[in-house]
Image (cartoon, rainbow, N blue to C red; front, side):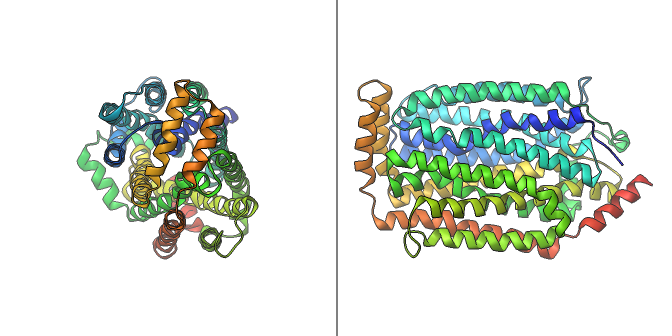
Length: 477
């Protein structure tokens, strides 16, 4: 049985803290930063939305290309470590620029387009190398489950450190608060990834010695021949679409349901539920997988997740609207989505040994890019959905009045207290129809996406626990 040494296990997992804090800042708050601190016309905001979608689609395509580059490079420092560190440093610099440099009007649109493209490409360098390293560290199912769980705990810590703190410090002083936050997060990204690079002991697999230099054609061949990878990849795309919309709509939901001054504090509480739900899902995962197999577990948590979204849709219409009920529903949803995500991650990683068993080749870096590809492509789809809802509903137009106040506050023309007071007056202008459109985007789309992902995995995915053990046993022989 392959046992991971404690140093590798902990330094690999701890490294996730900084990188996921950095990713959370950009993925969750970059558009909120633009919406509430930049004075842009609907056309300019729409152009930025198109840029994000195009860049994320390119980024998704770029992921497997990066996997080929990593697969073909072998440095003295290791197969993955140079890319992990270089990607962290370059991406940190881009993050600082995105939240610090502030041209106006169409000048900002051009600057954003270039910077956002660079952000995606530099993050891919780090992301593909970091996740590609995970399955190479151990093929033992127990060790891999422990590593995935431990790493996911630190992912949760990194995401929560940003997702929880940012909403409480930005309202009234958003321009300066985002700038300082970006600097701290960027430095943390470099620090935590350096811990991983120094501490992890990479493993070499004998099957890698038989691999020739890979081309783009080889990449498509590897993807196309692995039917279980295709199924898991499609499911991962759908799940990520469903999972992320609640958080991406979160700031606007709380601002427009409870007011600008109170919304930030309520977002913090909701994010606490996200942190607790996700963290407890990581802790509970090993115990849940002992109680039932993965497919039964997926069926149970999918049902509970759907129920949670239905309850959220009814809040304020059938169920009383108060923060306690919303937070309780949020906790249930986040816990179930955390378990679903872990099951899906194990299913994706198990297709590596499945491919090695069938075709006598091992390509950790390339197959691992499917997870990143689905996350990036779902991000493009989600961003398009969010921005379209904001523009069509008219909520973006209202939020630009708040943005003008934050710009004045950043220039020292008005106080934070004046921003909060005047902003509440603008937000109160939103109609019931506008709020309901926002609520539909938060609930119905996630239910449809997550349910479809579950159906695919439940009906078509074949690498269950027994089959994976059989494959690993054959590989050892």
